[in-house]
Image (cartoon, rainbow, N blue to C red; front, side, top):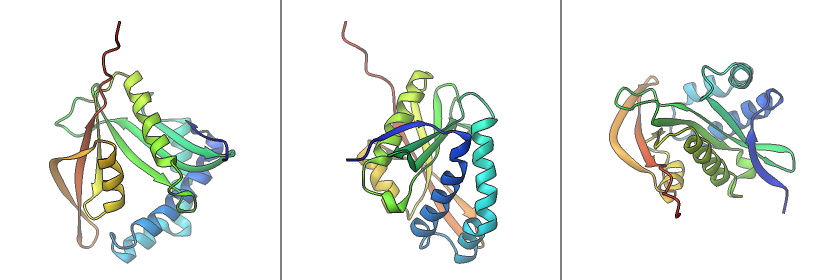
Amino acid sequence: MADVGVRPARRADAGAVAAIQVRAWRQGYRDLLPAPVLEQVTGTEAEAVWRERWSEAVTAPPSPRHRLLVAVASDLVVGFAAHAPAEDPDHDPAATAELLTLLVDPLHARAGHGSRLLAATVDTLQDDGHETLVTWAFEGDEVLRAFLASAGWAPDGLARDLDMGTPVRQIRLHTDITRAPSAS
């Protein structure tokens, strides 16, 4: 088995992260987003913009609690997860964080990288004192929703429609990440 793990992203990872994002979105969102929107956010120019944004996320995050983690296999970046304090007004950002994205390269899917990324995200957030983790997922993204459900996530009853030429529904999911008290 290849040497695998999760680590904080480095500036040099930005290109790999952007490429993974584009490949994962092209495959995973092709039936969820209108074709013109998907082309706009995954085209060559868009990939260059994402590369710059991910580089900035590593070198100049908005706060120390905004983080980008990468999954690696034999020193190759194969996935990533980004999280930040929750911005939804019904959550306290000191106690609730938001999983902004978690994507694994389709070429390396189903090898445990998503689970490792999620576990590392939770560990990091627990160290920061967060108790709850939320994320927004496309209602039709059955793969992500099943993955998160298997890790203890559930819808919290909130939904929103994104205007992408036609409304695209997202639902908010949440999970409790409070550490169990240690036995003394």
